[in-house]
Length: 240
Image 1 (cartoon, one colour):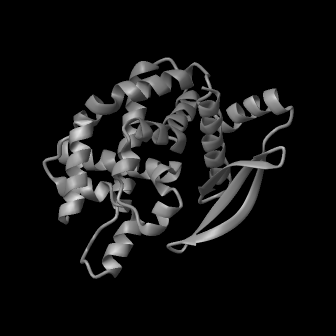
Image 2 (cartoon, rainbow, N blue to C red):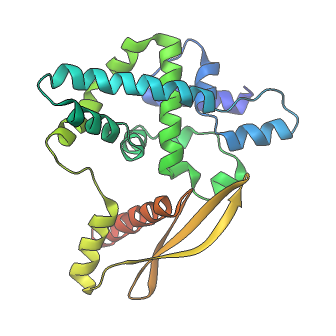
């Protein structure tokens, strides 16, 4: 880590109260592949992205969620538990948890990802959260993960097991738009971009032909969801 990176790592620990014995693990968890690639191409040696930690974190998350389900819902059918596990470990839930702890603020991103809104993209936030779980697991053990996140995930799991839908921005936006304009919002693919070799879809959401927000994602569906979220939050702000 250089000095500027260390300051961000220290700020993360101060803001979240999650203190690491090995700060290099935390740095790696916050380091997106686009940043690692840029740094290595610029001549730095062995700047590692969070992809391997994300791989481990995916398994840690699955165990964590399954343990909550197994203990809290002993009478539930296996099929119901499996569906709840998928929902609780979904990109949407992980992104919500990440936003609550302001994880995006502390990520190290390449210039391309920074320009295209990667700091608030669901997929990047979800991947970074999994990497963070792995870093905590390696640094402080599984019990620390339970201490930090069990209550929050129990909240989402309870909603899922009650059959309540997690927040769907596309549906919420459609309800607002149809009540005010009597027509549904329209999602239009305006272009695709290249970012570090990846294809990024750019989708615009329009109401009565007028653009109200734009979203980006690695798939068209992801870009539509991002556009809906931005549009919904914008309309709520205008109403308040």
